[in-house]
Length: 78
Length: 404
Image (tube, rainbow over all chains, first blue to last red; front, side, top):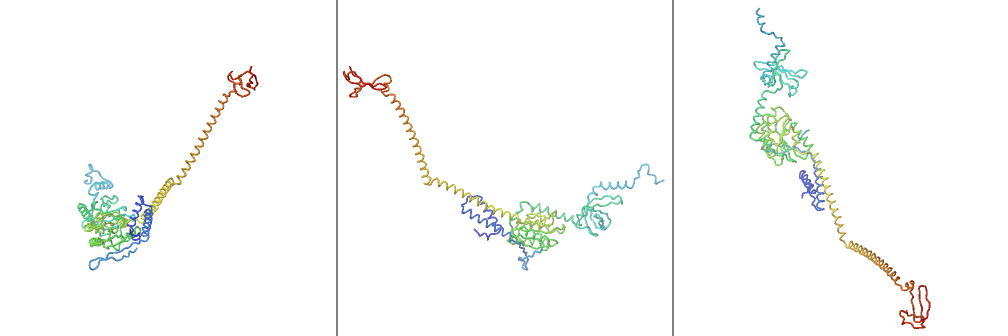
């Protein structure tokens, strides 16, 4: 299983949903359900943190003389 | 006399009467009540009340036009002298001046009608080809990571999209593929910008957008190559061209049509406010479900502990002790009961014995006779001889006799 901190937002959210689902099924060992609980809390905290810290990144595609494209930061003025 | 020749059979009208008659003639003519007129604007002016007055003319004629304020308000700008326009409306009479006038309800630059027809024809053609079919529409990914944006780098649309994404889902990355969005070269550039985004694997979704404009300004989005490029895109495309009321062919070809650039951005991403509520709810759910699980385990443990106690030796000893107590108390009861019975029986026997006492017969006048000497009870005559001294016992005492 991946470290929670390595997960993308959508993967963490999907795993959080899955965690709730498995807890709902209920046929778990006590140890298993406690492990799931801790994982679920960590996943939720990670999702929240990612949203809190996110800042929209804007880049633009620029064409090169060779007819290729490269990305460059785009300063989106207000 | 010639000026009176007609009077016998002809009516003379008042000015108002004949003007009303003319008006009625014009207003019952189908052509004059619903028509387009093309011409050059001259003498355009606007009254303080907001009504528009102008003439339409060509080489040979001119017609006075009125556009009431309610209609004139809807124009993006008032008509200018010298401008070629197409006007729609009806012809009627303004009685006070005895003038016929064109009452205009729609006014647009000349050639626009043709433009509409071309757009409509292209739309029909592509629709017949199946380019707009519902089953071709793809779903927008729920959490796009990289959103490609085809728009002008200087337009208001870009700013609107950035603002919405920043507010709703700043986790997304926006990749701008800059392009012209109006003018002759725009269609070609839009296609190229879209293809450049499609070539990049990280792009999950493309928004094609520009702000509102006239039909001519929006024409690049009514272009066949643009429509085909949108339909052929590797990733889903959201179109947001112009205002709510503007529909372009790009909108029909796109997977999702948004009414404005901001709306396109809103449709592209989830809302972080809702997401945060979902995350909080899931976190609470994991806590509650785990607690439930612990409670269940606790109850199961208690149930097993009870069963274990029932099965333990101590409990067996306890129950054996109880059994002994019970037996003891039962045996005591039984014993007591039996003794009681015996005591009763003894009493019965005593009373019976009492009734068998031989002395009791003395009361009825019998006597008991014994030899004084030997104490032997005399039952038969042969037992005594003359001169023997005998004791005679009666009920209340004894006296002696001598045998004769």
